[in-house]
Image (tube, rainbow, N blue to C red; front, side, top):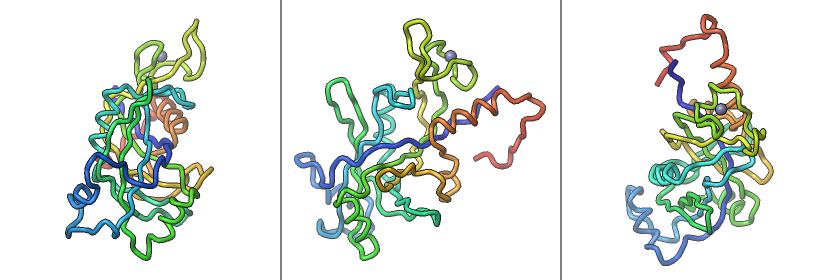
Length: 232
Ligand SMILES: [Zn+2]
């Protein structure tokens, strides 16, 4: 049986409100995305820590080679603001990304630019003031691989977080297909339940996405709906 790509959201963190120094002029890189050359005072730059290679509280981890793919896919993706039930507004664009190494921890750290328009002033202030400090990112993957048996976690019975022998089950995200979008949420928000673009709406928090995928897989085959026309 072919499984659909596994789509979910996960949280990250805003780690800096200024551009890194010493690795290129951000204006030059930002202007690869702008239709007219922007002056440095026309935009703000923020750095996000999107995802990393350590086992997280969802009992999942990214192998280093998948982090490289995510980092390569991030430039050009939108940054959204998720603040209420009315939806999301695009606020910025990821314009470059690199892997950040801290001991064994490797993470994806893209920079995003946000235009200093009147409309974005509150958004920028909320980030600079530390109110918006959490991020949420939508991804799709082909396979969440079980660390116990090596199968697609949706098809086996191992439970992430449960210990089997001396090994605690987690899963490894394999074959990243797409980085859908990033968003910034106020501190403590779950970043869920927002009505956004259809693709972002599919991206549930990891535990909910896994439960749905497992339920769908284990449903009797004759009851499984087949919405061929809705496939992308
Ligand atoms: Zn398993």
